[in-house]
Image (cartoon, rainbow, N blue to C red):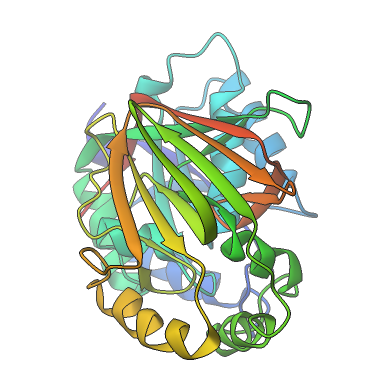
Length: 305
């Protein structure tokens, strides 16, 4: 099917961390119409609804979906696609129109919030086959979950548990992250990534499929979204004064090579902690450690600029 003949199902999250209550969709809608992009639209009604809508869309024969929202909205739709059953997900195409607070996956793809840019990208129809990560909780800490961007355990998940939803602003996220450092206690980690092991008291561990998370933090600047590998970044326990300069490096994409950071790549990753801690996937809390991470290579077709 040519790009001009494609008919998209647009799934809009009216909340998606936007202070305008989702009115950003109106500008995107007009831009799509001007670009002669063919689409139908539906809106989520509650958390988790995007997963249901995506699964139903595939059951109805749809194979082209646009997520209008943030990273959480994209994650819900990915869950729906990957759990639909009897569908070759490589024949499904997902696009994003970023309208959330962080929009970190869209940033990794190079897609901006500008409605004209979004319409141009959709009209062009250029795609790639994108890896999808997954998490299994062997001790019953939660159901199997999929992630398209970045997962993690430790302080990033600790912050995700405490940020109000939808996230009001990037400043809110940063404020919660900085305030939590005063009370957070780093657990003992044991990370097995392929044939390598990292053990000790860590602040956090990222398991990355793409490059950005946590509202513009460039945590995995060398991560590839189609190489079949997960990038692991383990950050050792740090004092508040030590954390601040590391944050600057994170936002600037200069964290690799820092003495407080270990960087590994692997097909599979296992994270154990004492005590058990929360695990996040694309910013959503999905379970608790121990957790096992893997990747389904080039599992989903994704629209790119």
